[in-house]
Image (cartoon, rainbow, N blue to C red; front, top):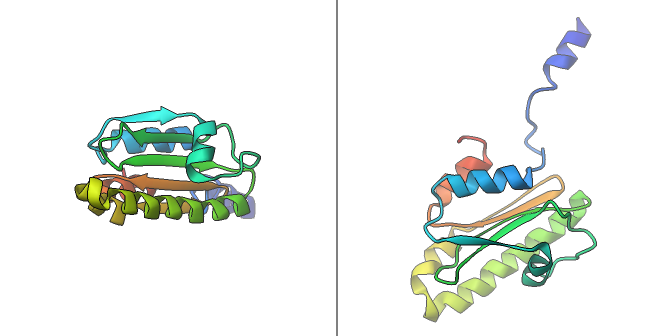
Length: 145
């Protein structure tokens, strides 16, 4: 009987279960949260963009940035361990702060998107979403759509 109960819990998702970078990025792109055309960039460029440690970033990470017409971007980063993901979140938040300062005069309409930016950590993954519809993006991250 105890064995059956243990097996029954195996299929449940834990709140701390890491994001799957490719699946999460695609679900976010498909959610309608973004209004701008986003282009995927290499992990090497992402390391420079966010100031990440290349030695801790997995090749499975996925990053999309705006064509330049908006502040929209999406990063689902996978790291070698949970502490690297935790450290990355502060770098992702710094990116949002820098973008906010840069857009203040140049693209003032983008400030709302940046003020609604989502940063989240699950296990060894960290996510940054700057989107026109942050609520649609959050639903994807919460597994609601």
